[in-house]
Length: 542
Image: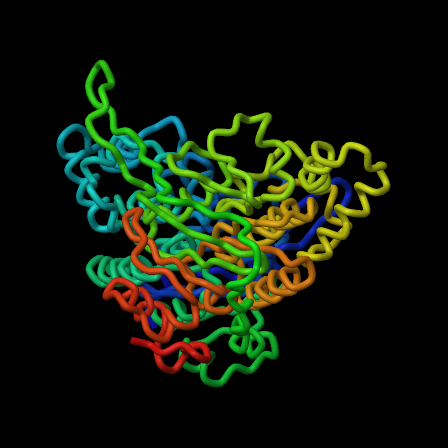
């Protein structure tokens, strides 16, 4: 046996919090051979990302330290390297794709500058050669109109497009080891398949190794050679993918493989009152060029969408990344400007000013796609959830506010004793639940859920679907559910809206569309998401 490219032995990671020490990773060991893909799977907070960040030496030292362990890469010990030495390894020999691209990309720099910086630092490539390589990379990862996106800033891209830029940056210098931390979380199923195929092709061409962190077991089957299952900081089971999937030994692995959101959506309610409606809604962003910044065209993010969402229903909104799903949700909530009437609970809210919209905000809430970017890093979890109560229920006593905060945390499955911690002390999935608790605490009528389960592992995802369904029944909530995960949509949606390039492809009862999609585009979406063996009950693969 040849020596592994990366060898992790008895790695432990501890975090000092005040006088306490929390062990996040407990004596983890695994090897990655040249050209091999090892997948780390497990529940949110199990230590997957902490393990990966240890390889790159990106943990917040000295708050984080290693009570035990060794990490060797190409026979070099990484843990004892100086900062100057590890910098030569990062971005060149080992690269990483982070879970939350919006917080990983520099908001002040264009896409071209951010990718070009990596090419300059590690390869010395500048000018036309750097631009050509940048265009090549953006094309490889499926960014539409790469040349037109070079001068875009991260906030001008959709969540999926930002994730693809991160992948392009990671692959720019053709590394020996790629660490991918949930690299397809924000991607729709068709682009996800493209990215996985791309990673496989690059891996075979370069002989690149991958450490692939994901909660999607379907991806593990497609891309990994070896899988390590983590729970509470320990690897409870590891081995070849086929063996672990077909004959799991540990109870947690068995539970993980059995987890699947159960299809039990709220039925369409044609006689219920309409909560939110739009008529020919448009959101066009101007494209400006030249010194005088003249408008030379428009990006038609939402182009003529008409919907009615009735009380107690869930409208599932699906489509490719960049199809206008999130923009539609923001326009409905009047968080961005749009053209066309928006009617909420019988009242036209289109054109209302900030103060005029405030009375409606209590009844219409949103859970954003990127929880880390939407939670203030300077506020504790308690303060974040309580903030809306201060604005909309100022007469509540401190005891009443605290009780409602704790009830909201319990509703989303979080320990109430963690409410005085800060967002950076939680995993990605836990932050997503905090964002949901913030929306629920005001007891709204209508909630826009923008990829609320994208950062969650399969077990928690199934629990979250059950939670959303139970809350909907108990409170008669109305949801606009935006997601690229069609299995979750199938479990929750009463009606389905399929978007492409800002336009409505088709709309109707979810059960009917899943069984009999009318357009080639919808059929392609479903084919990428489902197969006959794994299709939820009532869904027929095309």
